[in-house]
Length: 419
Image (tube, rainbow, N blue to C red; front, side, top):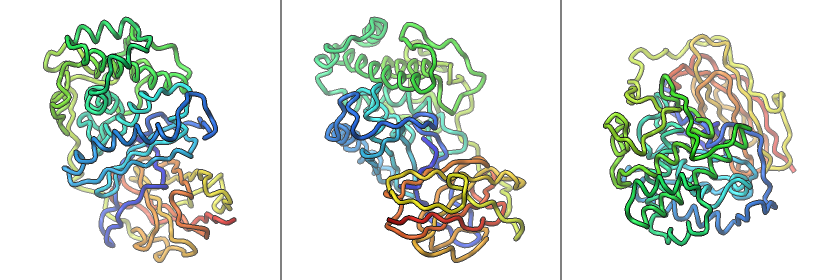
């Protein structure tokens, strides 16, 4: 789940003096990277039609499930974008996943791996505990586990998986593990298919991090001292996909937002097969989100203003290609008590109505929030902005809860979108 892209990320503006909005600060499916795969690439044979067909199936299954939670699933399909990543976000009642064409076209990614990555992003919304600390999103390891434990089975489990896996050169270690867990041929085939999708997705992580080869025969021996929220290593991710695939817990068993043992093969309940690997999961750790801070940092009186956001190191740039991603770097580290940043974008050809305020502009066009005092936001003008013009950007420093300002808004930087 990750770095925030303003292309599809906006939050409701609170009333003056109210807490600032807080949204997902998770990471992408992959760590931030510069990998790009152009729309002309034929490296893995992925087509736009297959890209959409895979996402159609995931969306059709999970749309009513998310609607039952009084939310709306939005699947952003960015086939033309060369970015190699995927993200999950929430904005009010919209629960979003953002899937990039560059990811789908990468040579390490099979069609099933792309489906699994879509499942991973759904897992941030529905995967339950353990979560990113203090946030709505299931952490990276749990989203990986959900992908094979629940989503791949529910969405693709009724396919002719015996025929599908017959054309795969599946490692015997995976096949044997699936056969030990399931007696039904279709369930075994679904398990093998999910494991092979996980192998491809984990291989992408291995390529990105230039790490050692991965294998179903060589599980990660590391044991963490506390549950890891961020991306596990490539081998650890493969172990997690394999564990979800072979877990004998029915996919219909519900997960819990607070109890990581429910609906899973949990080591705490003496499961031996399909348990989350300890290279990222610490059994018995606290899995509930911490309660809200009873003494939140008060909104500051006027004082020093935040530094302006920078784009390519400057505070004013001209962009002629609206498909070009703009990198926006912000730094609020000088503010005592700062723990996050809030970035907002004005409407075209209009500056903010409340300069250097401690609250958002009620007439803003876009906004996003991230934890951490030094952050990079991504903005895709073609997706985020309605047309040509001059757009102003500014940042407000937030406290550690991400809910209140600890300083005044910066002066405006300018993004000039022109032909």
